Image (cartoon, rainbow over all chains, first blue to last red; front, side):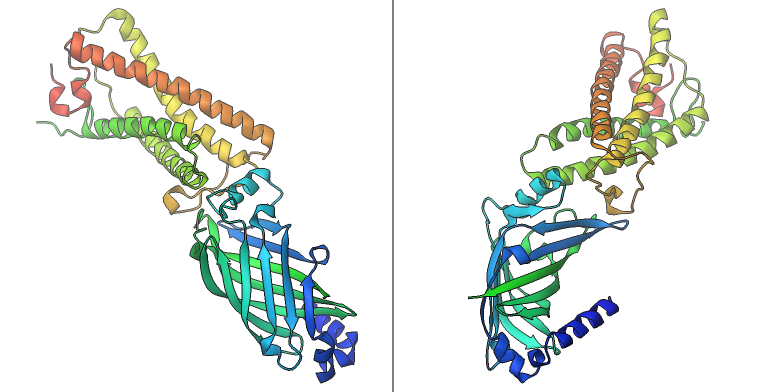
Length: 191
Length: 190
């Protein structure tokens, strides 16, 4: 893990001296549309006795806006369609879509609206925002790490933990952990 | 006056009586629960009822092991004179079969959750993690054990119905002590 962070940092450093110097931010500034092709939203839920199950959302949309003068005023909006959940096991997918978990028929969208972005390092930021699922909204925090910046595209690696019980999705605890570990790659295209 | 703990030639002791009714209630309750849990519309309730069914299944398995051990260490009261020759031969066979079902049902359920490709952990009453049986997981094995568990359940409940009918026949028609002596030790004497 440490090696990976160091690797990313090195990568980021090489990417361009200009990127993380003051100049860089103005390069990155602008609005991006999250591109599903270069992005992924994975999650893992631990299981009693070890292991757990992994899943991913296939459909989502969103925007990333990097503020030119003040990173803190940057914004991230993300909408996930829980109907698109996939775990590799059809019966589990059906269960997750059902009223037991997402109730995707009545709650077709899970939304995240950032309220604050705090820079925590050269390539990292803490994104606080309001997560809405099944009609319930709570403040959640995610860690974003800049993974790449090329002409017209920006890529972030986003991780965070969400307690599913707060959103009325506590079914299966304590067999399955209440903590959902998110691991996302969000790739934005300018415009 | 003898203690009412152990069985004698004419009556059952309290441990036998309590285990009998406790296991009987759980066995019938498990049949009803098993029937309902896979038919209920709410997936959430279904999931929770299935976990409850698993919990009671392990409780049943524990109780039946205790019951068989107790039975092996005790005498079995003799049948009253009202019991005919045929029934004298049939009753032990029926009772033996009931024990077989009480063992086979929880074990087949355990096998079912062990081979299921859903890999749902088992925590009886959320108290501790019950390991899976060392059986290979597959959809085919899951279908097999699911069918086996169902067939055993239907056959087992039919046998329980026969058992209840026989008990009622003794109590209401033959008016003997067969039912009463499994209710309280003091009713056992002829």
